[in-house]
Amino acid sequence: MKSIALCLVLLLAFLSPSLSQGTQFCPIELTMDGSPCGENGKYDCVEVMIARYGVSAMPNTCSCTTLPDMQRTCNCLIVCQNSKLLD
Image (cartoon, rainbow, N blue to C red):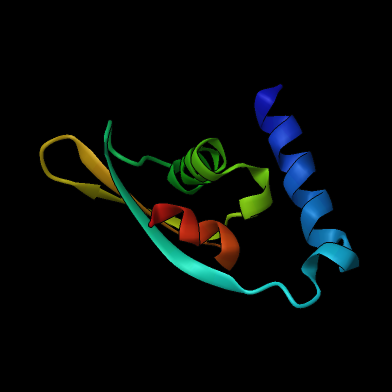
């Protein structure tokens, strides 16, 4: 159910012209402990980005890379103003 709600929120955010016009996206990379990426790795990365930066980050084009020592890296594009939260 949580995944369905997440997909709906993201779909509405991407389809809304008022939200997407003029929005700039910046790349972001997070490395974390966890199991290998698996088939749903990119969707897991979307959930991680939303949990960390909020739904307004509108993460997209995510990829997951399995690393040694039970770690993985998520690479996504998020709204640039949200990427400044790392500072």
